[in-house]
Each structure stands twice: as structure tokens, then as C-alpha cells.
Image 1 (cartoon, one colour):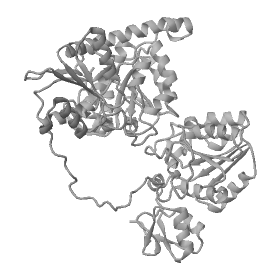
Image 2 (image 1 turned 45 degrees about the vertical axis):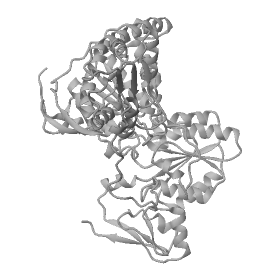
Image 3 (image 1 turned 90 degrees about the vertical axis):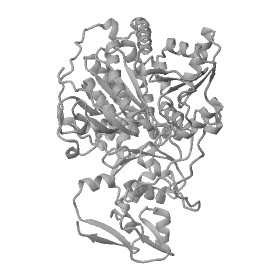
Image 4 (image 1 turned 135 degrees about the vertical axis):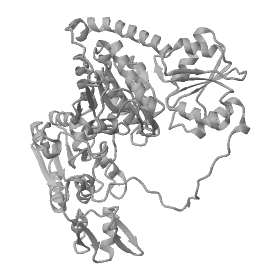
Length: 626
């Protein structure tokens, strides 16, 4: 395969070039070097930059890329392409793998000749997620070989290696990153880009690819054999690295994932590089048991460093017990727990204790500049001009605290905070309809559920179909802001045709809702406060499944699309009404000026909701462009 490059995109540079890349960008380059044919995803932080980078170069003709409606569909599309012989990549955040688990486990049984890599972007510390689950469990559960990079260079190299292994084994392979690896920046040296990557010709074989019970039993044995082959390859993997201490030592440290990077920093800072044996695992499933056994046999004590669950720690204890090895395996403690993220300082303390070298620990560094303790905290908030705020304000005016508010995953979850308080419970993507239905089925309290347009297409439609079929009693408010806003304005089926381009098809949400059997359906402009209040009041008097579609572009997205003159508001009349509007609408553009209410002109986007909420208090001001 000849090497080619294009100056049109920074990730299509020449072999030998060195670029400073995000970990996620390095993954994209690795997939390109492997010759990826198809990418399917559902966006979710910390994975979103991977499909976004592919989307930005989609005109290159190297691959097909799609934003799928959810992670299950994305994995099924990628698996179908891999069955047809293509190298396929499915990307998602960690909780998305829960959605994709059904096809994932069966794909591992039947095998995929073209090769499929699943990118699972985990989020220890819950930076942007509802949990911090450790998807190494899925690698073991589904019998997937698992790569875990700790640097941007490794992110590229391991992605390429994962594709090669997936094609060699004809089995799905997991590439697991965490938030810190996905969003780190580091130097990456480019390898060659293939001109083309051949497809593996599909051979019809129902005895393999149609897993009825008799076939599945046979394929389970084949899966076990493939994992055994992967274990043999892990023994000689370049990502399994052992470094012996140069001084006499019976102490060892085994590290995986991003903990390897923290360990390297801690050893350098403590001056312990020569005092302890180190084994780094870049392939964390299946384990290279011979390499691990040899390492354990040369140590009296071994410290295991891994974020998340103590999987490697427990596996090593079991290995030592099976082989009669005396090495004491240590790991989690009161500081390095299963919760949250590790850091260099935390690993430094743990290694210091393990090596019994407290004097080598550098004193804790204070902040470069003292931080005042009396500064107010800045909680996450809906953006100035967010249409969700107007909808929530109207709902609270009509309903107050009488109903329970079932929320979903998206920007609108931030409506949970006072004074809006429009989220009483949330389970997962699409659950606002289903969980709201369940609540309504056993409670006399009214239920108002909220879901975004992208989440509606992701998994809200099935809940709505269920609600209609089972005659539940709730109001579903679809917050249609015209994009997948929370993860960076990626396309979804409900976006306008001019935004999607000729290759995609716009789906009208009202048409979908009515096709699912909903007869009580209304749509209203989210910035039209009078119409919102009227629509909520009308829906309040009805029963059964009702749907209100509130439409208005995301303020940030609209700013990119619209070229109209900018308008803001100013306070025209001070007093109690102005203060009530500040307290009840709580737009981030509002601020205090002594005892008066003011509007920050740098934040106001001119939605004009406050003019409607408090007539006569505010007035609009136009600004010239430029």
C-alpha cells in the first residue's frame, strides 16, 4: 500500500510528521493509518472529538462516516460493515456501551471478518456523565481484547494495532480511553496512510453468522479460542513493557491505563526509577499471564495502580494463588479508591508509602496565587438565551410544584437548579418518557417529562410508543433546539435540511409523534411566552399521552447560522418586578448593580423572553454588526 497525504486536513499529514494532537485526534489518525472504511457513532463527551474530526474531513473520500441515532444502532451499522469486510469503528462514551451491549456481545460470538474496533471513552470523576462505570468490565464480559493508551502517541499506535488485531482475530476489539487521555495533548509522530485498504470478501455461512442456539453454542467455543490467541499475542505485545530495577529490589509496580503516566511522573519526582521493577500493561485484556507470573515470581510485594475497579489487582491475586507465588499483591487503599480519578500527587503518596521513602516526597505545592475563600461558586447553568429556560419558566408558571418533573440527558438537565427546579429524577438516555410513565402509573400526581430532540430520536421514540400502547398519563415536552447541543452541535435526524446537507433526510418531529399514535400534540415557539403559557394550560386540562414540541434554535448554534443584527435588552424600570424577574427567570445575563437589576450586554443574546415575562421593565436595544 502506497503512502499518500493531503494538505487539506491536519490529520492527513505526511509520514514522519510530528503534530501536537488531542488524544482523540490521535485516535482518528491511528484509524486512518489502519485504513478504516466506516465510522458510526453517537456523540458523547469525552468521545465527541473523534467523530467530529472524521466529519470535518468527510469530503476526502477515504471512508464513510455517520452520526447514528443511538449507540446500539451505531454498533449495528459498524458490525454490518465489518461483516461485509470493512474495517469499522464505533465510537461512544462509556454509558453508551450500555445501550450497545446487546449487539456487542452477539457480535463477539459470531465474529466480524473485516474487523471492528469499539472506542469506549470512560469518565472517571463524572466530569460530564451520570456515573463513572469502568468499561474494562465489558471487555471481560464480552471477551473483547482491550487496549488502554496512556499518551497521545499510544492512542494513535494502539488504534492502528487494535484494527490489525480485530482483523486478524475476526473479533471486535475495545479501545478504552478515559477523559484525561481523550483530552490530553501530546506529540504524535505520523505513520503511513494507506492508499486503499482491502475488504475481506463476505462468505455466506449461516452456521456462523446466524446465532440460533445450536450455532451460538459452537461460536462460544470459537470466541474462547480467539481470546486464547489474543492472550498469546499479548505476551509479546510492544505495549507490554517491563523495566527491571538497576538496584537490588524485591518490590514491583504493575500499572495500566492512564495510571502509567502518573506513575512515570511520580517515579521521576521521587527519584525512584532505579529502585523498583515496573511492568506496564497497555493491553489489559486478555492478560499476559506468563509475563505477569514471571514478574510476580521476582517480587515479594507488588503494587497495582489502576483507576476504577480493582480488576487487575484481583486477577493478580488469583494468578498468584493458582501458581503458588508468595508475592503480596497490594492496590486500592483509603486514598486510591475505586471512586474518582488518580493524579500524580496521589500516586506519588501511594508509591512513597509502598517504597517506605517518605523523605523523597516533594512538599505539596500551594496555588500560584492565593484563592479567596469567600468567592461564590459558579454552578453549571443554562446558557443566556437558552430556549429551555423559557419553556421551564412557563411550565413552572402554569404547574408550580404540583407535578413531578421527569428529566433526561442533555443541556436541559441543568434546569434542575433553583429557581427553575424542573428535574425531579433522571435515569438514562430516553428514560424521561418511560420512567415518567411508570411513575404516573402508580401515583396520583401529574407527570411532566422533558426530552431533547436528539435524545428523542436516540431512545425516546420507543418510550413514547410504549406510553401510547399502554395508555399512560403524562405530558411529554420535546425541547427541539435544532441540534445535538450538549456535545458540540452534531447532526441529528431532526435538524433542518439545509444544515444536514443533501446526503441526509430531515425528519419532522411532529410527524413522528403523530405516527406513533399521539393525538394530543401541539408545537409552539419556545421564545413565545404567551403561546407557551397557553399551550401548557391547555395540556394541563387533558389526560393521557400529550406531547408539546417547543421549537427554537440553540442560542450558540443560532449565532453561527444567523447573520442578523444583534439585539440585547436593558433594564428600563427598576423595582420589585425587575427583582422578581431576576429571581424567577434567573437568566445568566442578569446581574446586580447595587440594589438595582442590570443586564450584562456581553452575555445577552436578545431572546426577549424577559420582555414578555416582565412587560415594561426591559426594553430592546439594537446593535450594529461589526
